[in-house]
Image 1 (tube, rainbow, N blue to C red):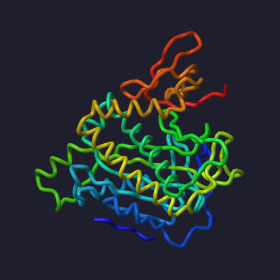
Image 2 (cartoon, helix red, strand yellow):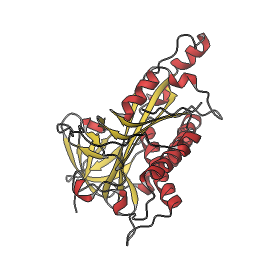
Image 3 (cartoon, helix red, strand yellow):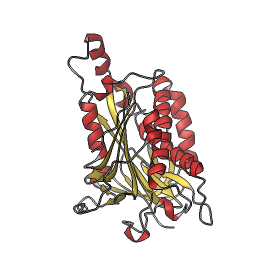
Image 4 (tube, rainbow, N blue to C red):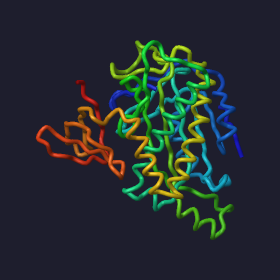
Length: 326
């Protein structure tokens, strides 16, 4: 069942952008390739937040209406040309003008035991990062885009940022969501099955064509600044989202079926794609503490080990990690 409903730049938490008056396209983005591989898709010209809409669909029981394919949980996609209240980690706002950015959320379900296991659930975020990197590379290859001059590597900054040539290209926000159900649709066995699952929303924001003079910080970048041969935003967004549906669904399915093996494979990929490891970093912890030092390793549970100037090591599971200049 596939449906289509007609109807990024990140800033600091206390400075929400004013989206009022921004001209928007009359129609939501067309995404035929994504619609062909997703189980349900909703596209909007304007939406408050694709993550909020995806969470709402899960709480309404939307996944229950869809049938698993080849044993893999269904995947719902919500995409928009403009978000008015998009957000990233730690309350940061994510705002893009029409045609500038990739603003797409992917919603599915995972076994509750896996999604709440601290030894495993960190790899859900890592799986999303790898899927985004792979999807970008696939889409760039599809349109034949090449870099302007020197290579512009796509990499991951722990735990949730996409980097291009050492600058932030995009971010990923993963959220766990209680699953709702349609009262008339669930028998007792089905209800028990739903209770064993928890919803997962993966929101992805990527700067595709943000002009250099509108990038929010000196550390930000946009894909078109490195790949001048890009396809137009519409087809490019569709190609990235379609590739990510396939990659993310397969990766999460393997994480459910064979957690140890998939975590090992993801660990290898994260080490290969890491922008963070071996660099000086500053970690802002949730309790307000700050750790500065060298990023030594991504561990078996997807945490990060940092060695400070005194030689002490710190294991970081959550936090805002900034890479310091050399």
